[in-house]
Amino acid sequence: MRDALGAVQSVLVLGGGSDIAAATCELLVGERCRTVVLAGRSPEKLTPVADRLRSAGATDVDVVAFDAAAPDTHRTVVDEVFDQHGDIDVVLVAFGVLGDQAMFDDDPAAAAEAATTNYVGAVSSGLAVAERLRRQGHGTLVVMSSVAGERARADNFVYGSTKAGLDAFAQGLGDALAGSGASVMVVRPGFVRTAMTEHMDDGPMATTAEAVAADIVAGLKRGAHTVWSPAKLRPVFAVLRHLPRPIWRRVAATRS
Image (tube, rainbow, N blue to C red; front, side, top):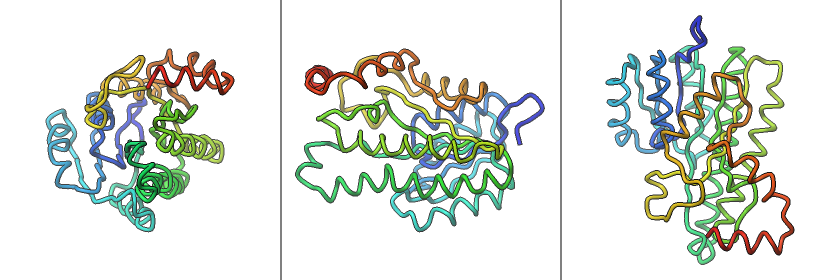
């Protein structure tokens, strides 16, 4: 349960290796969050992040195994974390793979694996989390979407389509939780400089994991249902979303 001043006391990260998630947790710990659970496919790789959060002031940092591509295990993992810690204020769904469109064109099975991780995994884990938040009567599920889902570009349409599906799922789930005390906050970052994008040139309005984390924490404080990061992307995509397709193709090609 959040403290008397509204500060988050506990957070579970599904995809604990995410640069954005780590930066978000560090900010929350700096604002009195004391319990952090990092869940990822390779728990041993999460040790540096866990140590960093302990150094920042977290008193209870746990690392657990979680495979986004194994949806049949998600309810068990989520239930075990909630049962052990009793109460979770924020759950951050931060896993995902970017992949490469040319590779997906040559290997449809790889495209399907990416879709399983980015969308199917988020659906199964998101529903499991929503049930526990509903039962405890409070808490926020934070879902990392992307502006790539607002309108898919030809050079990354598999990734964009998974984010479009994820965004729609998360918005609908938030509506389904209305009145329960639990909520969903969808985060739509643009191009973020992280380990996942280090091989790529900066996209328009490029930002950092730390800047996105600050926007996430600010969104949690004001009870937002959708966060654009940076905020100026919102009016830009309000226009881009409605461009005629021939014009969109030309615009998207210049951004690739």
